[in-house]
Image (spheres, rainbow, N blue to C red):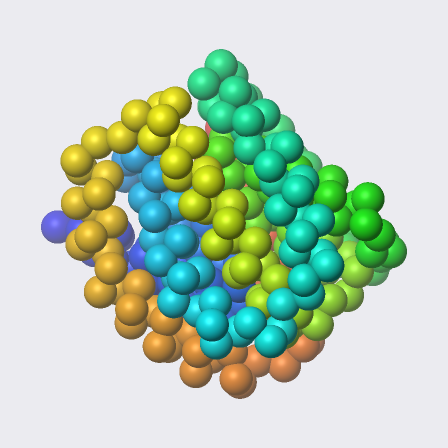
Length: 238
């Protein structure tokens, strides 16, 4: 019963965050799903549900998408995807998550100290590649994009729209890549199906929340999520 309650809480809260911010699902859900499932199962459940959310929202937020950045993210993502699946299949997942946690924490501290970077085409491509590698290796494409957009002080509308559009591509290809190279199980798809009603509820509540969040609150939520993810992954591996 405790496992079921935790699963419900994880999916519902993460779906609300994803809908209201554009990046919350994988950042919030993946670390906790790793407590309940094996890495392959946790990553694929995350990919399936995140893809559902992106599909449900893409038409509504299409006007907020920066198509130039999106194209460069996708090109970079294509490069990063095979790198990520290679890391997943060959590298000790413990060391991988430890390295990711340290990078996230260091960069988040820089952002809190008001470190800012300029947005360029080359950086767009590089962030897309990193995000692609993160997606197929640990199921978390969010941190590179979130850190980048925060550093360039992107508006919450553009951040959510462009991120969700990129996720629609990256989650689709990543899920296919995971299934082809790491395999899948009936339990993964059953768990995802059970979680769908929670995702629908999260979509509704997240849309209401998005309308009430100003830019400052949005930025605070961003920093809290990044710090939480980095600290959680670090503690989990120590």
